[in-house]
Image (cartoon, rainbow, N blue to C red):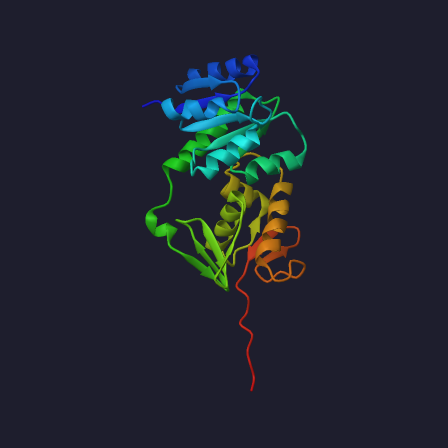
Length: 237
């Protein structure tokens, strides 16, 4: 069966360009032109992926992402933005977008991004890979997407959770920023590695007792990051 792509953009010329190129490579495409229309469209069209513009009438792309994820709808989302500001891109990723592209963009690159995400979904890990992960005082339940520290539930954004889980599954290994972009955001292109630094900083604020002197996520200068298990403090009588 053809994979279904829902395109959400209020500029008809862009929607038509995306629709034309996606249909050329065999996707079924449906277009809507405002944020509220997404929720009607997904009921009857049931997309495998959504290409979602950030700036939309009635409900913007961030609000659409947030509402979909609050409804436990995990359909992959590629956010389109004309904004160059890193904070806009991070906001989209933090609210549930799987990827973003900045306008103007190459239709061929968009197709490559879509294909990469769909491949990743088709090769999701087995249920055994969703076993709970524990490191130090941190306990992660992948199935429930919950993180507890000393028994207390910690609120993480979707991408913060994905980043922490990826680091935990590669504990002790030094990971470059580009490796993290590839593993967590599935970027097969040269992405903006500042996104990694910002998410690491936010994650440290939430899981470290002292974010300025982290015990879990250690910076490896000029390389990237490594997740370590804090050494047990010995007690003496």
